[in-house]
Amino acid sequence: MNRLYLVTDADICRQAGHTLPYVVEEACRAGVRWVQLREKNLSTRQFLETGAAVKRITQAYGARLIINDRVDVAMALDTDGVHIGQDDMPYEVVRSLVGNEKIIGLSVNNLTELQTACDLNVDYLGVATVFPTGTKQDTASLLGIETLGVICGRTNRPTFAIGGISAGNVQDVIRAGATGVAVVSAICGHPSPYDASRRLIDLIEEAL
Ligand code: TZP
Ligand code: MG
Image (cartoon, rainbow, N blue to C red; front, side, top):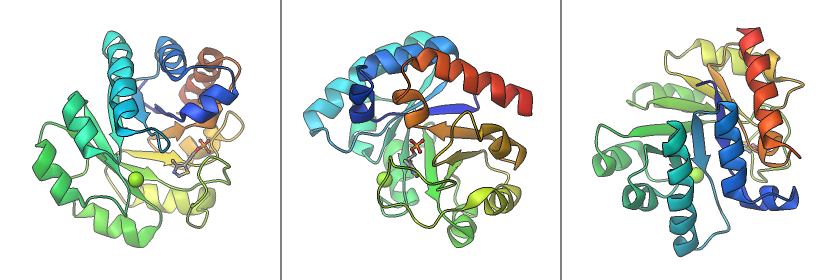
């Protein structure tokens, strides 16, 4: 299913008793087809090694692998694409480096950033931050369902809502107009990443 996007956090995986590759494999086994490696606490060497291990898994399941922030790592691993935020390398620079075949995702946090993003040929938008989350410290102000709906309604690009999304609110997010949802703790921090992914997929399909 293309509407559930797993964003990784190896620390949250570890706290739940999992390794990162295990979580990716379980999520893919359950049907997740978007995986973003988002690791803020790994050295470059560790990032590359982890990325190579994760790529073997995503390839086996036909899932896309996207690298957060690190365009160099994405290029070195020849992943499907890269995800950038507002303070990362600008879109045009990333596009010139990775070429037209690669997926570029961009985070937008408000309507102003959406307007700027609409002029760019990004492949999808991450729309943040919908609900309170303990996973990311430096989140901009929360969007809530209403503003999420406004943002998603003003773009034709695929939108992945992110921030505090769980089984309890995923249907509200989809019904608000998001193409899909991106989650960290709802899968990485769950005792069964497989069950968590399956449940989210079932709920998304039901809400469509
Ligand atoms: N960007 C905005 S919120 C967030 C990111 C990467 C973290 C979302 O994590 P969770 O655990 O799904 O709330
Ligand atoms: Mg970033």
